[in-house]
Image (cartoon, rainbow, N blue to C red; front, side, top):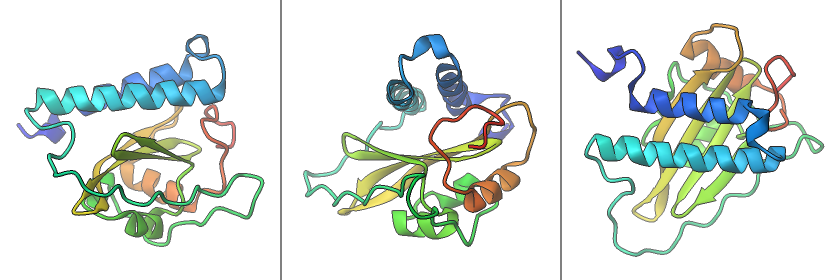
Length: 181
């Protein structure tokens, strides 16, 4: 049985835990704190999943110069978000790519965050979300984890989610389902 045919799997459970945390207003004092808690929980869950699979939680690499931080994505009040031009059919197709290639495919993310050596990006469309984790590899950032998930009650395919993310306007981070973000 392949890992894709499992009902949920360790990374699916992490995505569900992240969604539950973000959707529970009692668990957050503000949207910014909620986003921080959600990202921290997602990172802990991802590390636990990697450990359960016997994989290192971070690439073993010699100390190297930290990659230069990417500029922040444009805010909702600024110019329109740079949209993607080549959305892939699945999130896993993006693995191994550098940030510039991901931005070309999907446009600017709604949220970026540094977590140690990792950089976490979150994309959103009205009915789905995409979590990306980049790690440094040979003095450059490389996408090592990509997971798309439905958001809200509407069902849609991963391919439809990726296309919606690529053409999404400038959404405010962590909006409620059907709330335009």
